[in-house]
Length: 240
Image (cartoon, rainbow, N blue to C red; front, top):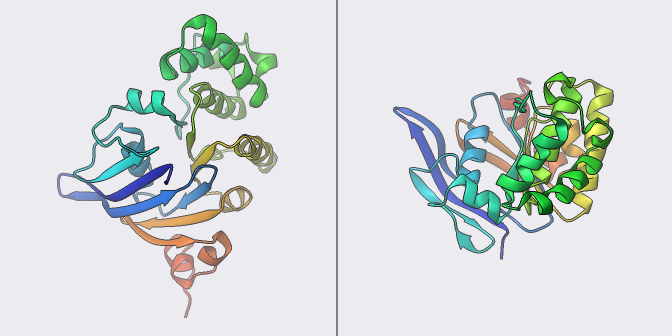
């Protein structure tokens, strides 16, 4: 049984078809990378998986259950966690308090039970030493780490990462890759949208390419990136 199965989902906003008849599945413990041009429908796909958006057609199954009609909060309690492309921490709260919100509201724990989860998430992301700093004072890398820590505090079986490496320096990207590799080693399944392809290549088992809301290709990362069609559409390289 697949951990997540997305079956023929479509989503439109007026006349704009954002996702069209898109399907994929992954097993527990796998890591799937998703690439595609800006506007290809990648974040909308995440929203369909997490329940922030309902599909016009198609179904989403998680852990053997049809979750298509369930809310984002229910799916989070079931084990679907995510980070967002642009971090929006509660700036006037401490780093610890931000992560505790994930453990209590995201995972549904009481504060006394959520506290050790929050501490563990801070340890896993290298933020424990900054637990008492105001989240609004953090530099970009630490805001990205905070996004990751808040998602981990929800106790996800499936972790969705939306361009979490965007805007970082090469050294910072390397640090982030190490953190994500460690998280994956714990058995957490990962779906990662990213424009920094070498970061994906260091983590994922498979790569899926989306263009105009449709799945263009899926398979071994090196094979996918060597495809002439992917080179032309995603990287703008014309291949004769």
